[in-house]
Amino acid sequence: MKAGVTRFFAVCAAAGLGSVAGCGTPEAPLPDPLALATAANESGAPRTLEVTLTAQETSWDFGASKPSPVWSYNGTVPGPLLDARVGDRLVVHFANRLPEATTVHWHGLRLPNGMDGAPDVSGPVAAGGTFTYDFILKDAGLFWFHPHLRTDVQVERGLTGVIRVRGVDEPVVGTDVDEERVLVFDDVRVNDDGTFPTYLDDNSKMMGREGNTLLVNGRRTPTLSLRPGALVRWRVLNVANGRFFNFHIPGVSFHVVGSDGGSFAEPYDTDHLLIAPAERYDVYFRAPSTPGMLPLTSEPYDRGHDSGVRPPVVIAQLNVSGAAVTSSRPFPNVAPIASPIPVGAGTPRLPFVLAEGTDARGEFKFTVNGATYPNVPTVSTRVGEPFVLRVENQSEMDHPFHLHGTFFQQLDRDGVAIAAGRRVAKDTIVIPAKATLNLAANFDEPGMWMYHCHINEHSEAGMMGMIHAAR
Ligand SMILES: [Cu+2]
Image: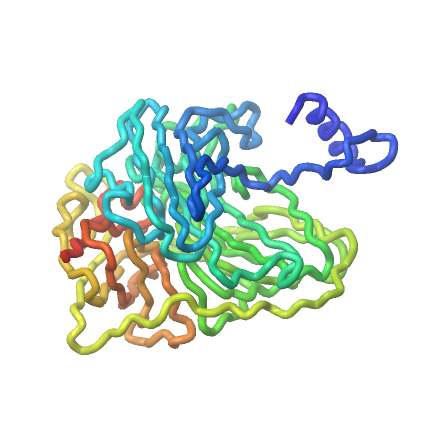
């Protein structure tokens, strides 16, 4: 945007005079402050998205007295939205201009093992180094990318981005829904002068660091405009290190149609939507029919160690205004993407026990099967052969469990079966404190696939391991 245009928007937008006479031209609408950056497609080939992605130091305004020294992909927090269709080829020319090594992990995508960005599989990308990621987007859904090295620090500093892979029968804005947004929820902890604290307190080490600044698409407590009565689709993603969001809008019910890489055969309605770090949800709701301001809050949720004893926090304001929508579109029909993974008496069961404790020096440690990564014994399975991950959480707090390279489907919790219509292709799921979940999975690519808690402080403190999928 040119400087003159910027000044026009600054003056007229601040005065609330968007298009009022006397505020001059241009005719262009005000820029959407929540629009995600995009990356230019460098390919002319059909069904190919080819982009350059550069991890670099940038400054970004989180609302502190000074901008923060973030690490970003292509200069924005979050990084660019990569928009593609299922079956497309994605080529990413990655350059690391950070002062330390990193990788790019493509969270939730099924891809060849060497493209997964796991540093112990394909090696880190050194400071100043480059790597080209190149693979086919096999599944529709909302996915994301982030480093898989010093994840607690590198993700916190701003290295996140979104991949939206559209399916063949996606609802169309203007025909099936009135509007659609991709919303990236995050929190960062910044000092008054915008710098990042270097010291991590004990509570952050134990619970995962929660920030003092809540962000939607990189903006602090923004205002989102909605037309009265509009049918809205939100595709939401939580990229926070440790915070669980428990969304609530007064008087609004969320119609939940999908999560991670799948759709529910039986969508459900809820007025509270819990989303743990790294999860995604695909939800619809109808905006209130009367104009006004509504808060989007995160309501208390106890994820262990008395973490639910605190007031709600406001994440954003919803400004319901403008011409009312009278079309009263119904919620779209969404076909389930995944079919059930067959599980029988002979299906192999792989046990994973999650626990917390302290090491000999008194530091917190988070273990899988009694060990911390990289000392957790690798377990083995075979490509194309369904297996069941039996994940038992012996600790006093929830852990969002993430598996690379494929999806899983939750079969039960503590022996109580999940209804078939509520099984969905997930890559990240909350294992509640003291609970046991059975998850059916099946790799279609060979290799060493990581699994870990997606509270980044926990995976860095040991709650991580590998599954070997042999041919
Ligand atoms: Cu954890």
